[in-house]
Image (cartoon, rainbow, N blue to C red; front, side):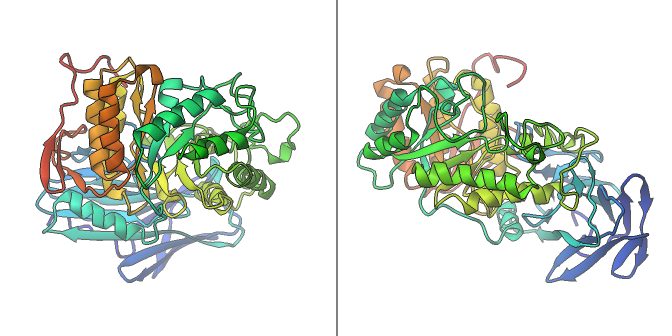
Length: 530
């Protein structure tokens, strides 16, 4: 056996962390300490964990199951939100945090341990020679949640095992077990996004030029592409990068956002738009709608703050007519940092909480996702800097890794290729995964960029390209037309073959045929990091 650990049973030990940390007392199907009670319900091979407390703030719940792992096992975990080039199989690292789920495998036998999507707590696994620990983070901001007697189901734990499937095929099925209600787009999604060549420097006329190029490259394809206007159009975009609210009009370079959507549509291309829903620069916004951690962000447990987000989403999708909505920075704006590694999710700024102390961070964040979905008027939703495990079922697409680049080939390889390989099993099981754009500029040799383009086109996942008009050649046009035609159908199936040995896979099985991609420049990487 790869492991003797069984997590579909009541844990051996439960520890609780509020102001202090203490062991909870076992009482049959639950553990308790003072007014805190952690209850377990085992039904249909799923172990549900619930928390009840009256006045005591609770920050973490630690569940521990005893058991052993085969010495030959390697371990794969997920990322808290996006991948940052660090998804990989590793040997046993007892202090390693593995968000949401993990696999243990020796390639002949594989076990999966995870929680179902949309839990009400952040979940982190740890494993060692003596067993498995699941940490459930139930904080409200950085403080303990105060439930006031409310019973909250925190997570549903699932596990699975195979001696027949290879690890990738097993993970694909395990993702389907963790999410039984994905929200999938009605047709394959592909197109263009202006960020990775414009980087915020664009205009109404330049977006229309991008749309004309996209229309030409996809001429004759029945499934029409999307032209996504990224960060550049908002009123404050000319003075600050990644500007958030207000989202009620464009800036001087974008004088009429509704007209621009109509003109894009008239070119035979579907209009898309980017927003940053939680950051606000509005001088006269009521202070009670602002987050106590930082007044530049909304408190997303305030109903009126969610109403503001709903109004923005209704405006851009309903009134202005954008059919694709990319929303961004939602994890950073909620919790104050990017989660480059799982420990970043633990080390939040101290001393603050949401105004509604009864809500966990997971509940508050899901409230934003649901608000956007409920007010999107049927638009395709792409979540960027979104916690995928919380967003599954609430977004059509997930930007599954950090930014690729139109300037730095290293970054495209480290972020794009790693993300695609290690999160491909989530595709169509959680949502459609988006490994980000092919950034087409003079700064990256087309001989290399076209390899990433080909991989995306053959992957069966969404394909977006940022195409700098002055950099576009006839050879590029031919390659892009071929790639967009494949992306308009997304009928291919793909899996990485050497992902067990490397974080940047080069060998893939695509529709039953092996393909190999060389990602390295002759001198290796250009620098020391992406």
